[in-house]
Amino acid sequence: MPRSKRTSETFVRQKQAFHPESLMMTYGYKPEWSEGALKVPLFQTSTFVFKTAEEGKAFFEIAYGLRQKAEAESAGLIYSRINNPDLEILEERLALWDGAESCAVFNTGMAAIATTLMAYVRPGDIVLYSTPLYGGTDHLLKHVLPGFGVTPVPFRASACASADDLSASLEQARATGPVSVVIVETPANPTNALVDLAACAEFSRRAANGNRRPLVMVDNTFLGPLWQQPLKHGADIVLYSATKYIGGHSDLLAGAALGAKAVLDPVRA
Image (cartoon, rainbow, N blue to C red):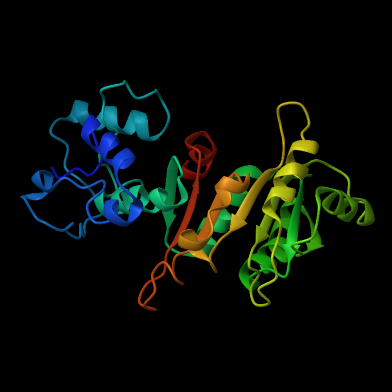
């Protein structure tokens, strides 16, 4: 069965030794797992064959969180909604550019944004967001999430905005409840207004309540990972509509969320 996940230390050393420009050519793919094909084949399948029923049972236990994966154990291929060699390789390579531990890909950018928000917001929470935002995100925040008891509170995108300005936005709105997420788009769509990501990270630290603090999510679609890496400025999750510049040719729909493994696990689940 073709597999894409790295299992040897060779790939770990390779990641440390080469720049993303070089790694993007081959990283995360072993030709010997795919009949020696030089380039990654397209796996047009919904399901995968197990060697034994016991193997399938073990794969499902890991996939649905029924137990932790052993150190030398593979997560296994089950169903393309969960994992697929092409998707896994794409996730590995996208993570290179942002310096992220983990990546989850989606069928659209809005799927990535909506899934990520739903993983972290709860009824009674506040989502602090920069304005303007992409129209789909704006609609989700203003017209969908309020139906689930989530309050959106805007602040104007500005490169000069400080952590104090973000706090003032909450006070002016007289909002009550915990801030679970700060979501920003920089440069903003369509004005190209900028947001100070370090200020958002500082606000997140100040707004921490016990072990919980607001997660900073950044829609990095306009600049992409070549020109801006939000994780390096204190963001927790980077979001993309890969339909745009990552895809580059107007021939696909895709989205992605990237960050630390512990932060991405609830999103992936």
